[in-house]
Image (tube, rainbow, N blue to C red; front, side, top):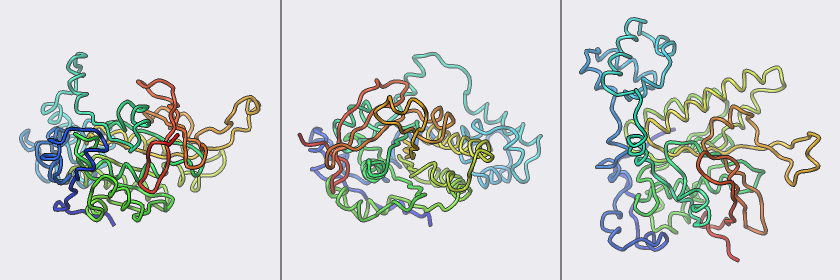
Length: 365
């Protein structure tokens, strides 16, 4: 069951500063609670325009309550909804929806901006460290907020281990590669292990129990249940500062609930809607979305000419939705190889990292 407390403290230790080679004066402000820091002057929280502001434009409080019940908690969240979806909200007529949309447009500018202004808006983006210097460099500084990062590969390639590490590092202060917020983990394959969090937290000088308190975990059993859990995410993020949303894995339940080509179109349609919901959450709340994906053997005629004849499932729907796609494969021993499979800004290069008891680390030569 999803629950969290505002009073949980995640205290950065001097060792955390050493790991990321930052100045010691970071400790003074960085050694505060991830929750308390983000609730203060954090840019991502300030950028949220709560839906209650609609009362300034003459929208009734009862209608705002109906929007909240439908999972819409911010004014930008209204712009991200189709009119037909808003009309389907119980108690809202088409005339009321038109009035709400108009009021939202008066509160926020949804038109064009020039490149300089957009560059300033992009400064809100944060980078969350993966725990490996090599992997951070590959990703241009770490996992990016306001976007979806997908990692795919065979079993035992490090997808879930990276998710566990990110659940810890996202709670670090932004000055040392963190996200200054909590994490939500939607578990579709029963892969989340709280005992893995403890050594990772200790590595970064954090209190393990406090770190665990700031990770909300929900187990999904069907794709409908998975969609329902994601609908609850907006309510949580509107209440408290979060910096990471993990879905491990995004496609597992779809492979189970839909079978054969006869159900392929319906599967892809629902998968596409879920991915669109994830992107809206990423942009609305300035969080990093990390999803894992499975692979399938490619029996095509060209499979004998390529070194790795496996491809991620989900087709073009998933390929277009993911901002950055990472291909993971096994190396020697605990070493793993990560390759940029697709990205709008990163070159198609690869790096080597390793899996240790302390999470994702740099590989030893």
